[in-house]
Image (cartoon, rainbow, N blue to C red; front, side):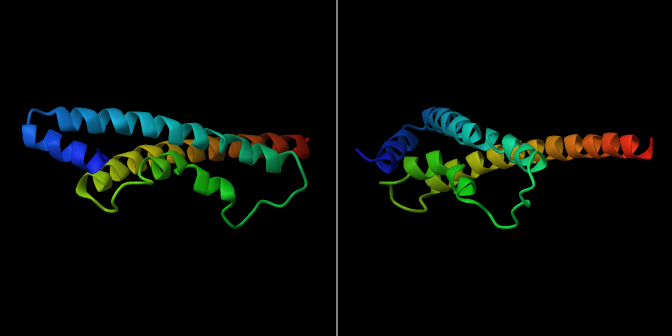
Amino acid sequence: MKIAEIFRNLKEKGDGVEMTLIKGICEEISSRCMENLEAFNGVAAKYRMTDVKTPTKPSNFTASIFGPLTRFFLNSPQNTPTQLKISQIISQDVFQRFSEIIKEILISTKKTEEILKSYQSE
């Protein structure tokens, strides 16, 4: 039985099982995507500690963030309402965490720059 058939059967029952299942799936896949996203924390440190120029183009790493979501839908029909709902929920979760990571990196970078400026002015 395919994912779309499972959801169709659950939706016909109408007892909220579908949303419970969607929520569980989203939590699991979001968690796996965010594990990949957490590696992003190390990117800024890598470029601060070396003379390597900061990249201006996306790396292959970026595509791996949503790898768990891509693999989950690999053998499913494309663009079903359920698939779009799951993709939307997971994307929102991951982008929210990405935003938090970027804010943390910017705060850390600003603090580092301020410390360096204070040492240079002494």
